[in-house]
Image (tube, rainbow, N blue to C red; front, side, top):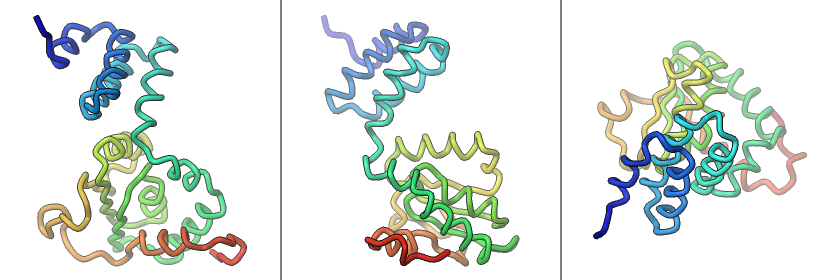
Length: 185
């Protein structure tokens, strides 16, 4: 007799350690969406269990490209963005970002006073994490996260009109700079 991963996950609903171990097996089998869901649920029911938290966070981090961690921690980059957004953004501004990642740039735009921010993230697991981070930081009232490629976006459905500021253009140029001392906020 075979049992489906979905059926097994339902049976392990209130057992976070076996659930997160199932998530590891699912990940290894290439079933990343199912592994992601199992990890999130294991964290919900096992938030007080250090082993569950460690294993689930490790699995969830695997869906984030390694280079992303470096740019999120890059203080020179973050300070330059923050300063530029503070100068460019106003209460009527609609900021659009392509490649949400952690949501840090969208949140900077919201903190700078943007009336609305639309951000796109094509990796569903990264989008889900960013959505939670944005909500936890109290910016979900002004930031709309669209979990798809920006090139697949539909005006009137995914984005409600023209944007005043497009964040990723700067990110791409910024990423090409080898010498950060050349960059001025």
